[in-house]
Length: 229
Image (cartoon, rainbow, N blue to C red; front, side):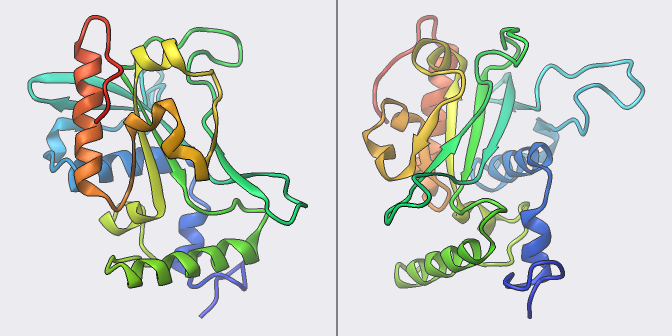
């Protein structure tokens, strides 16, 4: 079975998932993470559908909010597919890019969040249809060898979709001290980066929980910490 617009898609469900607006996808994946990885009850998670309020009478300060261990946190979400460097070379270099971590395009400082939940989708962007689905097929075969689930038609609200992702949970203090406004992250060298302490693959639940706890400790501290998880 192929997609509706994309003849190379594994299914129409997989095709629709690929076209979700990045702002909405980020919010869906954060709630997925909170519910299925952190096991937090839904009433402790705030996900505004619009940052500006349906009637324009209220403006949310961030993409999401979460109550964790008796404190509330504002969360900014970011999404990136591959941005390929040296695309025409024999060995192109896939990267992720998360824009505007420190300030907006107008230069306004972003100070209304505690954490950035940045998700890298481990696949090419829309411009590479054949490569996108071929890459996912390779990931599925690798997961099968390692005994992990990897559904090619998983919906973003399902736990299994996180297996397609790399996840950063970045405290505001760390971002403003150590990050660029728009970092470019070379995927194959993630473990060598300073921000690796705040990163985990979506299939590694123990690691993600440690990363979350570490990020929360940094947010709650006065000066932050550079210790490793």
